Length: 295
Image: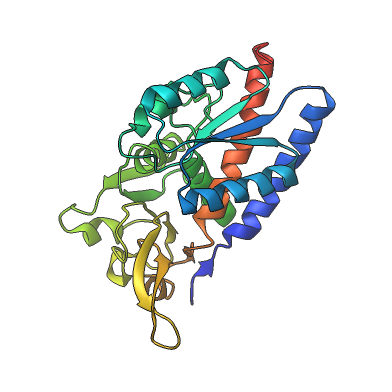
């Protein structure tokens, strides 16, 4: 039997309904709810994402502002803007559009964001508190993976989970969140010897390695839940044989869908849920600031 394909767009819409209700309740109480995104220059992909964010925020009742800085802006320039946003009580959420120009260290800029306004969950304080199961704001992609697992109705307690890819913002936080839910977690990467020996035993396989086609049929246990976090652009051709690029994940979708019990597509799987987690984090950040008397 072919895998159940998890529709990330539909799941995101259901979560957004709850986010919209929470945002409406906060506004009714007179509390600010504003997300500010910082963009350096005019990278085309970031501009598209910023416009999408603006539409989503309007849809959910979240005020949105894009602070667009000139491409000549350096680290101290960006830092000053972040400090101003940190100090502004009307701003309850801050995020940075990546990539930034090569002369700016994006990690230093992310670390400068107030942990209570860090809606992406990338400040070291938030990453660190994930390990203690008391994050202020958890990383969006890790939260999206948990929501998708919940959608499958899978029981994590006692499940054999394998996470391929151990990046600081995605793979490692996912591994920790799964362990906190009492799964038995194996942490792998694309260089793990005999990778299939590990992944083929997994009841839950989460792949976030950034390597297209890394996981194929021999890597997957029949009936497993497979969550593909990878987003890769690869060359291809259109119906007329003209060269085009397409977006694929880390999983060979067609090969694995015949074996897995549930599978996320790329695009349309983890991505839309991650964007929604950003907006849910925006509301959560505002609520926590309100509780601390900061707004």
